[in-house]
Amino acid sequence: MNEHKLKEQICEIGRRLYNRGFAAANDGNITIRLNDKEVLCTPTLVSKGFMKPEDLCKVDYTGKQLSGTRKRTSECLLHLSVYKERPDVQAVVHCHPPYATAFAVAREPIPKCVLPEVEVFLGEVPMADYATPGTQQFADTIVPFLKDCNTIILANHGTVTFGPDLEKAYFNSEIIDAYCKILLLARQLGPIHYFDEQETRELLDIKKRLGYDDVRFRKPGCALCGNSSFDGKYGDFVPQPRAFARDDHTAEPSSDGRAVTTDDLEGLVQRITDQVMVALTASPY
Image (tube, rainbow, N blue to C red; front, side, top):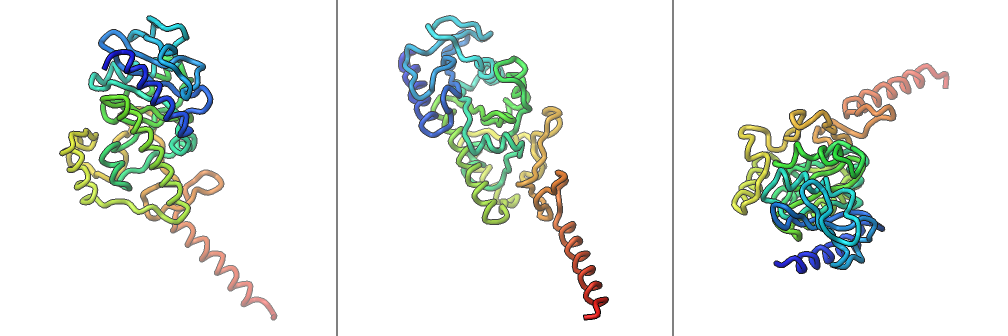
């Protein structure tokens, strides 16, 4: 695909992001790797829904702008971090899909072992710590995770997704947002039901046959549906599940932020019941 066609493709994906509400106003940015020296990227302060091919910029791998009449996006350093760590990646999408971003704002880890399509096409989705957008520190927050996933939640910010071409990178943004929407809807109906180890293993076998990678392939003997594979070895920021904790005894957090367990609630109910019975017994009526 020649450079002009790639620019048209970026504009098309930009329209999809805008129309789906993944990039309000001037939000979001998109890049495509051209070669080992140049990257196409979207400009700053231009709505992704109304870009034209001539609006796009070209940068090198330090972020220096090489061409384009508009200034390059301030967050291109985030994209360059991906390209430097992943030679197989050809395109990166950063946006703010509302349901996935809700998880980012709540700092609620994305649960695994729930939906077949997510297990096959995404796998585990880590959450990177917050840093000021546009800075090198911000770009560095995702580096520990890059070799082990294709979708990352950015705490208090949004998502970054990447793949072997732009459409696949964009599809990962759609998949994670649809998944987060399903989780939030299901949570209103009742508890989330998780796959067991055998069911997950069967899905990972499908994933392997399709040629997709998964961090769990490199951790033989680990619990497929246990704690996150992105533990403390990936950094100090390890969000802990609250609303979507897998522990069957875990309920909603208390007002002081401490997780309230089913055992706590049962004990509280019993104490209240005992007090009521004592009061009734002592009553002259």
